[in-house]
Image (cartoon, rainbow, N blue to C red):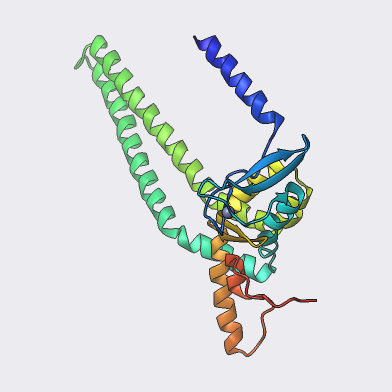
Length: 257
Ligand SMILES: [Zn+2]
């Protein structure tokens, strides 16, 4: 039974590997609302098209290479200067202040519990020496207290890890954002899909253009740019890109050439 399941799974994975449509299901057609899926043409060319499960759709087929290029475009908008990165990291740290306080309180509570247990163990040992409690009772209680102490130690280690990871993940993602587009260009479609999963949600494809929403903390980029634009507007300075472009909206429909 188990072996059959393993065999089935192996068959399934070899079948999917044969035609690996990395971008299947990631994007919705902006015309008919169905998922954009991959299919193979002439046995080797991968094309993408909406599934047309709600009837025929006029959105044309697109080759995987061209589709990948278009999908990567919103990543370019994540290129920004050091000033903005620093601002965002500061904002991230600020937003985690409450979280950090919560961790601090939890850790202090656990340490107090731990100290109490160590005191009890010590006192109990003296009681045993004084003959106030029996050896069997002492061994039983000691095992209980030591188990309790180990449990607290485990929670303490969890807290310190959680605390560190929490901020690091955000900062790592920002570092990634800086070079997301150049990274994307070097990757194969499967890796590209992973990167896009990390950065985008709600992708819409229409007229050969992609609209995306950015996931956290990439979405903070948009907010911070807005703030920067407001500041620059008031100081009558121009900002090269509108913050709304970070949300994937095409604010520059005129041909640039
Ligand atoms: Zn469609």
